Length: 260
Image (tube, rainbow, N blue to C red; front, top):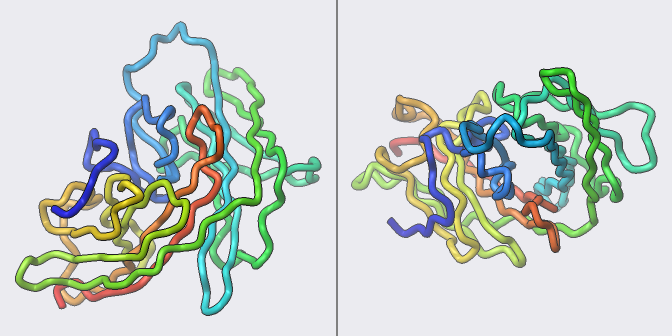
Protein backbone atom coordinates (compact mmCIF):
# COMPACT_ATOMS: atom_id res chain seq x y z
CA UNK A 1 0.00 0.00 0.00
CA UNK A 2 1.48 3.31 -1.03
CA UNK A 3 0.11 5.27 1.89
CA UNK A 4 1.33 6.72 5.15
CA UNK A 5 -1.14 6.65 8.02
CA UNK A 6 -0.69 9.27 10.69
CA UNK A 7 -3.53 8.11 12.89
CA UNK A 8 -4.94 4.67 13.51
CA UNK A 9 -8.56 3.72 13.05
CA UNK A 10 -10.30 2.26 16.00
CA UNK A 11 -13.32 1.13 14.01
CA UNK A 12 -14.06 0.82 10.30
CA UNK A 13 -16.45 3.76 10.73
CA UNK A 14 -13.75 6.37 10.72
CA UNK A 15 -15.29 9.54 9.38
CA UNK A 16 -18.70 9.44 7.83
CA UNK A 17 -21.36 11.94 7.01
CA UNK A 18 -19.82 15.36 7.04
CA UNK A 19 -18.14 12.83 6.40
CA UNK A 20 -15.96 12.49 9.17
CA UNK A 21 -16.35 9.34 11.04
CA UNK A 22 -16.28 7.98 14.41
CA UNK A 23 -12.97 8.19 16.21
CA UNK A 24 -12.04 7.65 19.85
CA UNK A 25 -12.59 9.95 22.75
CA UNK A 26 -9.04 11.15 22.61
CA UNK A 27 -9.78 12.44 19.09
CA UNK A 28 -10.98 15.61 20.67
CA UNK A 29 -7.32 16.44 21.07
CA UNK A 30 -6.51 15.37 17.53
CA UNK A 31 -9.56 17.17 16.24
CA UNK A 32 -8.13 18.21 12.91
CA UNK A 33 -9.46 15.13 11.33
CA UNK A 34 -12.75 16.09 12.54
CA UNK A 35 -14.08 17.50 9.92
CA UNK A 36 -11.66 15.12 8.98
CA UNK A 37 -14.01 16.32 9.46
CA UNK A 38 -15.39 14.87 12.88
CA UNK A 39 -16.32 12.57 15.49
CA UNK A 40 -16.41 9.39 17.33
CA UNK A 41 -17.38 7.11 19.86
CA UNK A 42 -16.19 8.91 22.88
CA UNK A 43 -16.05 5.97 25.12
CA UNK A 44 -14.43 5.34 28.42
CA UNK A 45 -11.46 7.67 28.46
CA UNK A 46 -12.47 10.06 31.22
CA UNK A 47 -14.21 9.70 34.55
CA UNK A 48 -17.61 11.23 35.21
CA UNK A 49 -15.97 13.59 37.68
CA UNK A 50 -14.23 15.59 34.97
CA UNK A 51 -15.35 19.23 34.78
CA UNK A 52 -17.80 20.16 32.05
CA UNK A 53 -15.95 21.28 28.94
CA UNK A 54 -16.89 22.31 25.44
CA UNK A 55 -14.88 23.40 22.41
CA UNK A 56 -15.78 25.24 19.24
CA UNK A 57 -14.23 25.39 15.81
CA UNK A 58 -15.11 27.73 12.95
CA UNK A 59 -13.41 27.01 9.63
CA UNK A 60 -13.50 27.96 5.96
CA UNK A 61 -14.56 25.43 3.32
CA UNK A 62 -13.07 25.97 -0.15
CA UNK A 63 -14.20 24.37 -3.42
CA UNK A 64 -13.84 25.30 -7.06
CA UNK A 65 -16.54 25.62 -9.70
CA UNK A 66 -15.18 26.23 -13.18
CA UNK A 67 -12.77 29.14 -12.84
CA UNK A 68 -14.28 30.31 -9.56
CA UNK A 69 -12.97 29.62 -6.06
CA UNK A 70 -15.99 29.40 -3.77
CA UNK A 71 -16.17 29.46 0.01
CA UNK A 72 -18.49 28.34 2.75
CA UNK A 73 -18.50 28.24 6.54
CA UNK A 74 -18.12 25.23 8.80
CA UNK A 75 -18.94 25.16 12.53
CA UNK A 76 -18.18 22.31 14.92
CA UNK A 77 -18.84 22.01 18.66
CA UNK A 78 -17.34 19.06 20.50
CA UNK A 79 -17.12 17.84 24.09
CA UNK A 80 -16.65 14.79 26.31
CA UNK A 81 -20.27 15.19 27.48
CA UNK A 82 -23.35 14.95 25.26
CA UNK A 83 -25.06 18.06 23.90
CA UNK A 84 -28.80 18.46 23.47
CA UNK A 85 -28.63 21.83 21.68
CA UNK A 86 -25.86 24.00 20.21
CA UNK A 87 -26.13 27.37 18.52
CA UNK A 88 -23.41 29.69 17.26
CA UNK A 89 -23.37 33.42 16.69
CA UNK A 90 -21.25 35.10 14.02
CA UNK A 91 -18.87 37.98 14.83
CA UNK A 92 -20.78 41.15 15.54
CA UNK A 93 -23.71 39.31 17.07
CA UNK A 94 -25.87 38.54 14.04
CA UNK A 95 -29.57 38.50 14.87
CA UNK A 96 -30.15 34.93 13.64
CA UNK A 97 -27.88 32.30 15.23
CA UNK A 98 -26.61 29.22 13.42
CA UNK A 99 -28.27 26.02 14.65
CA UNK A 100 -25.89 23.06 14.74
CA UNK A 101 -27.07 19.46 14.55
CA UNK A 102 -25.76 16.22 16.05
CA UNK A 103 -23.27 14.61 13.72
CA UNK A 104 -24.56 11.19 12.63
CA UNK A 105 -26.40 11.02 15.94
CA UNK A 106 -23.17 11.39 17.96
CA UNK A 107 -24.18 13.94 20.53
CA UNK A 108 -20.63 14.86 21.52
CA UNK A 109 -20.26 16.49 18.09
CA UNK A 110 -22.63 19.09 16.66
CA UNK A 111 -21.90 20.60 13.25
CA UNK A 112 -23.15 22.88 10.53
CA UNK A 113 -21.75 23.53 7.04
CA UNK A 114 -22.90 25.95 4.38
CA UNK A 115 -24.81 23.97 1.71
CA UNK A 116 -22.74 23.74 -1.48
CA UNK A 117 -25.43 25.58 -3.46
CA UNK A 118 -24.94 28.59 -1.16
CA UNK A 119 -21.16 28.91 -1.47
CA UNK A 120 -19.98 32.33 -2.64
CA UNK A 121 -16.77 33.98 -3.78
CA UNK A 122 -16.65 35.94 -0.51
CA UNK A 123 -14.91 34.64 2.59
CA UNK A 124 -17.01 33.83 5.65
CA UNK A 125 -16.99 36.63 8.20
CA UNK A 126 -13.74 36.61 10.17
CA UNK A 127 -13.69 37.13 13.91
CA UNK A 128 -14.94 35.41 17.06
CA UNK A 129 -17.75 32.86 16.74
CA UNK A 130 -19.61 32.33 20.01
CA UNK A 131 -21.03 28.89 20.75
CA UNK A 132 -23.83 28.33 23.28
CA UNK A 133 -24.38 24.73 24.30
CA UNK A 134 -26.97 22.96 26.38
CA UNK A 135 -25.98 19.51 27.56
CA UNK A 136 -28.30 16.54 27.99
CA UNK A 137 -28.16 16.97 31.78
CA UNK A 138 -29.40 20.57 31.42
CA UNK A 139 -26.11 22.36 32.07
CA UNK A 140 -25.26 25.37 29.92
CA UNK A 141 -21.85 26.40 28.64
CA UNK A 142 -20.53 29.10 26.30
CA UNK A 143 -17.25 28.87 24.40
CA UNK A 144 -15.73 30.48 21.33
CA UNK A 145 -13.30 30.21 18.45
CA UNK A 146 -11.66 32.83 16.24
CA UNK A 147 -11.83 32.44 12.47
CA UNK A 148 -9.15 34.04 10.32
CA UNK A 149 -8.98 34.60 6.58
CA UNK A 150 -6.21 32.12 5.73
CA UNK A 151 -7.13 29.37 3.30
CA UNK A 152 -5.72 26.65 1.08
CA UNK A 153 -6.83 25.77 -2.43
CA UNK A 154 -8.24 22.36 -3.35
CA UNK A 155 -5.90 19.69 -4.61
CA UNK A 156 -5.77 18.98 -8.33
CA UNK A 157 -6.89 15.37 -8.82
CA UNK A 158 -4.59 13.91 -11.47
CA UNK A 159 -6.08 10.44 -11.80
CA UNK A 160 -9.01 8.54 -10.34
CA UNK A 161 -9.35 5.21 -12.11
CA UNK A 162 -10.61 1.72 -11.45
CA UNK A 163 -7.84 -0.85 -12.00
CA UNK A 164 -9.56 -4.01 -13.17
CA UNK A 165 -6.63 -6.36 -12.54
CA UNK A 166 -6.32 -5.17 -8.93
CA UNK A 167 -10.07 -4.59 -8.39
CA UNK A 168 -9.13 -1.28 -6.81
CA UNK A 169 -9.45 2.45 -7.35
CA UNK A 170 -6.21 4.39 -7.64
CA UNK A 171 -6.33 8.12 -6.87
CA UNK A 172 -3.46 10.57 -7.32
CA UNK A 173 -3.39 14.31 -6.73
CA UNK A 174 -1.02 17.25 -6.63
CA UNK A 175 0.47 18.59 -3.43
CA UNK A 176 -1.28 21.51 -1.74
CA UNK A 177 0.79 24.34 -0.34
CA UNK A 178 0.53 24.48 3.48
CA UNK A 179 -1.93 21.58 3.75
CA UNK A 180 -1.33 19.62 6.93
CA UNK A 181 -3.06 16.41 5.85
CA UNK A 182 -5.48 14.82 3.39
CA UNK A 183 -8.20 12.24 3.19
CA UNK A 184 -9.96 10.48 0.33
CA UNK A 185 -13.65 9.57 0.07
CA UNK A 186 -15.93 7.65 -2.27
CA UNK A 187 -19.47 9.07 -2.36
CA UNK A 188 -22.52 7.65 -4.11
CA UNK A 189 -25.09 9.54 -6.17
CA UNK A 190 -27.25 10.14 -3.09
CA UNK A 191 -24.40 11.80 -1.20
CA UNK A 192 -23.70 8.84 1.07
CA UNK A 193 -20.07 8.26 1.96
CA UNK A 194 -19.14 4.70 1.01
CA UNK A 195 -15.45 4.93 1.84
CA UNK A 196 -13.37 7.31 3.94
CA UNK A 197 -9.62 6.94 4.27
CA UNK A 198 -7.61 7.53 7.42
CA UNK A 199 -5.97 10.93 7.77
CA UNK A 200 -3.02 10.98 5.39
CA UNK A 201 0.29 12.75 5.88
CA UNK A 202 0.73 15.92 3.82
CA UNK A 203 3.49 14.26 1.81
CA UNK A 204 1.08 11.60 0.51
CA UNK A 205 -0.35 12.27 -2.95
CA UNK A 206 -1.75 8.86 -3.87
CA UNK A 207 -4.11 6.31 -2.38
CA UNK A 208 -5.54 2.94 -3.42
CA UNK A 209 -8.98 1.69 -2.40
CA UNK A 210 -9.51 -2.07 -2.60
CA UNK A 211 -11.96 -4.52 -1.05
CA UNK A 212 -9.83 -4.94 2.07
CA UNK A 213 -8.71 -1.32 2.48
CA UNK A 214 -9.68 0.04 5.88
CA UNK A 215 -12.30 2.77 5.68
CA UNK A 216 -15.40 1.22 4.06
CA UNK A 217 -18.61 2.57 5.56
CA UNK A 218 -20.78 -0.15 4.04
CA UNK A 219 -20.66 -3.93 4.09
CA UNK A 220 -21.31 -4.09 0.35
CA UNK A 221 -18.94 -2.91 -2.35
CA UNK A 222 -20.34 -0.56 -5.00
CA UNK A 223 -22.27 -2.22 -7.79
CA UNK A 224 -20.53 -2.89 -11.09
CA UNK A 225 -21.06 0.14 -13.32
CA UNK A 226 -22.03 2.45 -10.44
CA UNK A 227 -20.91 6.07 -10.89
CA UNK A 228 -19.12 7.41 -7.80
CA UNK A 229 -17.67 10.73 -6.74
CA UNK A 230 -14.06 10.73 -5.59
CA UNK A 231 -13.29 13.51 -3.11
CA UNK A 232 -9.83 14.57 -1.94
CA UNK A 233 -9.94 16.91 1.05
CA UNK A 234 -6.97 18.95 2.31
CA UNK A 235 -6.76 20.39 5.82
CA UNK A 236 -5.13 23.52 7.21
CA UNK A 237 -4.92 23.80 10.98
CA UNK A 238 -5.08 27.01 12.97
CA UNK A 239 -1.79 28.57 13.91
CA UNK A 240 -0.75 28.00 17.53
CA UNK A 241 -3.90 26.04 18.34
CA UNK A 242 -3.48 23.77 21.35
CA UNK A 243 -6.52 21.77 20.18
CA UNK A 244 -5.44 21.36 16.53
CA UNK A 245 -8.53 23.20 15.41
CA UNK A 246 -9.10 23.69 11.71
CA UNK A 247 -8.75 26.93 9.78
CA UNK A 248 -9.71 25.58 6.37
CA UNK A 249 -10.83 22.48 4.52
CA UNK A 250 -10.49 22.45 0.73
CA UNK A 251 -12.24 19.80 -1.35
CA UNK A 252 -11.71 18.57 -4.90
CA UNK A 253 -14.01 16.09 -6.67
CA UNK A 254 -14.15 13.98 -9.78
CA UNK A 255 -16.18 10.94 -10.86
CA UNK A 256 -15.45 7.38 -11.94
CA UNK A 257 -17.35 4.22 -12.72
CA UNK A 258 -16.78 1.33 -10.32
CA UNK A 259 -15.62 -1.77 -12.13
CA UNK A 260 -14.70 0.01 -15.36
